[in-house]
Image (cartoon, rainbow, N blue to C red; front, side):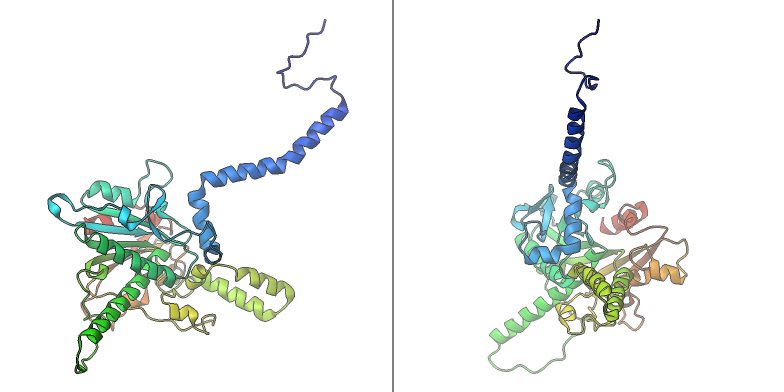
Length: 393
């Protein structure tokens, strides 16, 4: 006597007609792409903090031009959300003393998470560790659309820091900026526009207050110029540049050269490939020679092999800490200078402007090389953190 098959048993019945089994298999095959797309969507939603910055780094300028809701806005971040300056609620330390305020800026295709957590919830990185070790310090994080021009983001950083200091003049004391990769270039660009803003305000004040032309005085150099103490530049004490392509990225230089050669060959396949390469974002293109001001990418010669580039001077009275990673054990080789940490050449990270022996004396520059560190591990290395901790705390 044969027992009846349980309805919950997943084993197919031998009496089931073949046409039904075939129809079921065809149905599963037809649903597979939709099931896969659904799984990819769920994975994308779970990892939105990663996929969205990557999308913005690659095509963020196009998203912003279309006012796409996926375009990242320049903002401070807290609890995985944008937060307005007025909502930060910063307060002085005990006794009414202003706090040393540290602002962290990520690099291309990154976000504020790179400063906070690593491979697990217990893997705290520089921001939370610094907050634990030095409670008097206030750590803030910025997220930006890394597909926009560096100078556009640099100008917005200047505006955001100016608003921060104006909103919390009693809470924000000395200002420290920490930038990784492209984030460091934003800091230098913001300094350029901050100086420009201070200069324009001084000129406007002189025009409004002068009843007769004043005698011409020689313009002070950037090394002699002092910043108003109530501006963010007047409070800026330290700038940390971690793996920053100060003289440009060899990867983007190679991409530009490849696109240029393919375009010159002028065949349909090479033109098509060149066109695809040229779809990369303005932020990526600016990395070729670290273009920090609007005039450089607006120049008609911006796409030349060796385009003109504005030299952005260092800010007076600010201590610069140039931290360079290297895949090699030795720092005395051409491979070290060219490949550096794998994404940024060590020669570019060290920066010609930081090594200029003809520069005026008194500049405050410290350069450190960390062997056997790649671009990403600069953000989690204990020695790098200890260097920051000792100089910030």
